[in-house]
Image (cartoon, rainbow, N blue to C red; front, side, top):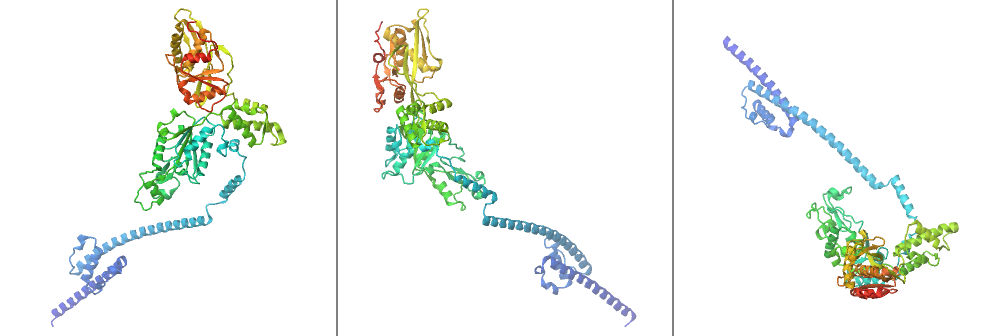
Length: 640
């Protein structure tokens, strides 16, 4: 072997050794990168067969794993020499650096998430512990227990019952002066087919008490539909307020949508509306009594009528979902079927029937309670005195009846006088108390009371003075008229003057009277100056003063005295006919209470006269001539 050949072999060996060392270095780098990638991705992502691959194949495999999401770098050519392998390893190192940076950021975020979750979990655990502690210890604390004890202490204290509560009748036999009304109400409720009822009458005459007692009576009768536990639900129409959005409606019921449920969150959190039943459902199979029903909102009255017809009240809400499985059964039943409301309505009012909703009147029977005459007020006072065990000085019951026609007010006056008597009695106690006229006088003065029934009737004649009759509410009253006539200063230019506050109907009655007087006497009242006065200045509604105006002006013109114990009512026609008017029953009672001995009424009003009225003579007249025969002391002579 020559020298050159040895040299070449030696150079080749050196190159092979250098290449071996280079590839070994690259293999070590690949091994290190492979180990790091295993830590990043996990052993399950590293193919175990890589251990048996050549260097080029390992580099290719690592390159694909590092850049598996980069399509451009995925399409690389297999390296063929150390230089290409080194360049590919450099790319892998850069990729792994990015991967390590990304992993560091991810770990940092994951740690923050873990810390936050642990914090919230700890807070949740603390809340759960507090709830468990509250549940075991209850909602009470020292302050709430103290307030509860104070309330319980108050329960064992109390004042004596009020006078009206003590005097309240316990049976229909104790209701004074309303025999016809009680009988009528029983006949409408205590039957197999009870009716809705409207009760008219002045205040304080026993409307509410009678309704409650009649229901108790009906419950004991076998032929009535009322069960033993039938409720008597009482409400005042003046205090019933409602929201057109049905958020608040204590009468019919209301719907509380989730946004209006306030602190009660059990349904609101699920977005479920809550339907609440009202008084009509509470009165189911019983009586719903609405006092002062005439004051009830007109639109609410119409909604009540719909419930009365359907015997059921329905609810509606945009939030209600019939397919929601979280909705409780009772909520579904109320929205799907409504709530039962089969009740009997009893409405009481002090208004005139003409002021009540016609639709409501058409569905109800009507019962009228009467103003209490003095003898009934006196009986109520005597019965009340027995219940509180006091003695009355002679005439006290009559004295009280001068100041009221209401049973409730009469009892209140008696209780006020009882208090005065106790004060006068000093420390002697409440035994053997006698209520005197002096006690009642002091009550009257302190309360600024005036007599409600002035005594007018005197059996004497007087020129230019007559008594008419009027009605205010359900109370009749006597109206005193007077007239003076003078010959006109200029012939045919006489004037007629009348109270400005009396009302247009009363003025019309004067003009109608002028025509009738001219027909009777042949004289034109333009030859007289006439002044007519309604004493007290009250406003007179309606034409019922017509007959009184003819008789009054005729008495003043012809100097004919009029009986002062006789009152008259009736509309006058231009032909001199006396036409029917309203309120006859109340007017007769008012005339009787004022001390009148006789009352003239239109003949067509005879059916309106109660057969039970006594103590006053009732005369029916059809023409003005018949009225003159009854009320003039001396006969009227036409042309005189």
